[in-house]
Image (cartoon, rainbow, N blue to C red; front, side, top):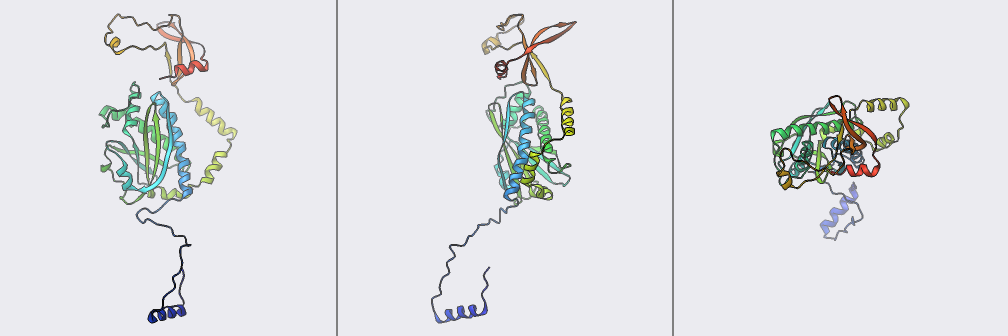
Length: 331
């Protein structure tokens, strides 16, 4: 800031009194930054970049867990990370939706996880044995569907906690409640700045969005730990032999479902409606033909079906070649 001395002040007053023209000062070369007092920036650019890197880990967790739950390929990637007033976020949420209210521990406060209804119902449909078809119109969940949604939310929060362990080991989110109308949720004042992480999720052919709304006061105690340089160092870290041993041990204890399938066929709706007891469906394969053993949702082995005592069983006869794996992976 430029301050006038007494002589300059006297000269300015004298010029005004005599009616002389005052020379204008050119300030066009001075940089002037605009500042919106209604949207004060709480996070700098480096911190936003670190937040994005943190939630890229969360997106990878979603890809793996949701793919296993829905038995179809799920992809998740960060769309945007921005800081906006809480009121602006709530105006962008369309009801009905799935809005999970999260407790933030150990610092207290609430955060929000919002999942688009089209995405929610695609997951529900797949988990209940359907094809993951999109909704014709948005609607609220039934009581039965809410039970399935709770399981999906728990899986998502589990992945969020795993990612945030990189910031602080005991930093945890937990589901406090769930709402379908955003107007019934007021976790912070409307003018408070929040961090909005938008994640694009695709379940089969259905695309939707998952939003994380993180109020500034919940993140303030750990904001200094969001340093991109530390993240790059962590990524380059090589694991010790003992750490590799722990990872191998944990992987060995993971339970994976196995599914043996004889084959699949297609029928028209007219043919299905005409089916009755005693009808024979031609599967287009010989009786001695082999089936497929899936590890999780991935076709892995060819099998031959038979019996052992009073039980039906399948004997592994070989490993499927890559081209056959791709064929059996088609939904």
